[in-house]
Image (cartoon, rainbow, N blue to C red; front, side, top):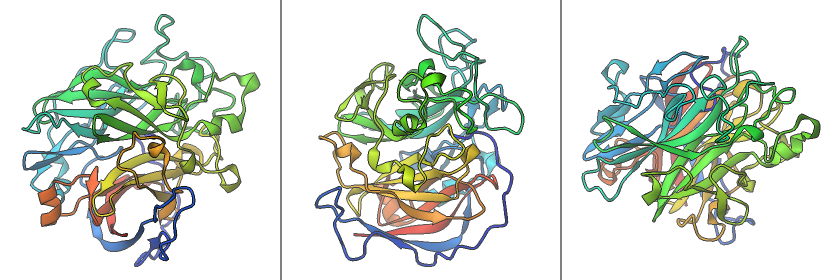
Length: 442
């Protein structure tokens, strides 16, 4: 995930932001110029009593209904030479969202996960966070799950292999997110499978990866974020494909210090999209295709094209991910809204070194079929969802409510209705919580 397993110091006392009624989207039902015939939905934030999540969260909330049980999979697992080995990727279950989100930390269950492979041998390397769970519709029991995971490595855990081009060279490597001298991580995205509802998992391979030539090194990478890579994903299924929205943090070409351009870097970054056939999740590596600007035609490990409407223009503070001054959106969380009949994306906003940012944004896409034409690119310009001055906000998501309708529909963070609970993480406080319900209007 972007910044993993750490909390930034508290920067200031929180300034109270009055959001008793905060609405975005034109109330006059004006049409958006960039998406013909689409009316921007409006929304308001309804303040509620604070709903505290009782366990560690550092990612999108991966969840699925297994029969009549809602199951969530937060946390981190695996080797990490900077932060230490973690065994926090656990699951909790409940009859509804309020019940499962209220589960105390000591009640979480640790699933059986694949062990890390020795350095330079094939297998799972680095640490993983589950970001999305796709439930195989071919299994009527609902117990066959595919977890789309964020995976972080360093030159120490994944040294460069000249035969495969995989891994990283520990030379001019940028600094990572700590107060001491430690290396920056590189994220990749992979797939695990469970056939028993999440109790046991098998690693199936990589979904997407950026390789060494695209890493952004010293002297240019001073942001204390990533050296490059792809991560912080959210995946949704449409017909025969799984569509992956993710953060792109690499250089859109081969990084060379002598020819480096911050404008070129920024042009290839922000939130991007790729897809894979659901039938290929069993053996995913090499099967996914990235959006290349015209179609899903770029290979899984080469340069794609980000969603231009989600990029922040330079004149509005946008910039490269490797710069402490670079502004960009990251950490998408995508859901289908059954009331609006459109896609909704929440995202974070980086505006300073070490993933600093006190704002969250929202965007809409009217096309159910993300595979037709350029539908996957038709996202509205991001609108401010919430701001908490003096704080650092990460990982927003819309979650179902404890209502008969949401329970009957088996809604999750991937499918919501007219009203949904907004969760996000106060990174500076180390807390994941909800203070609002989002109510949408057509």
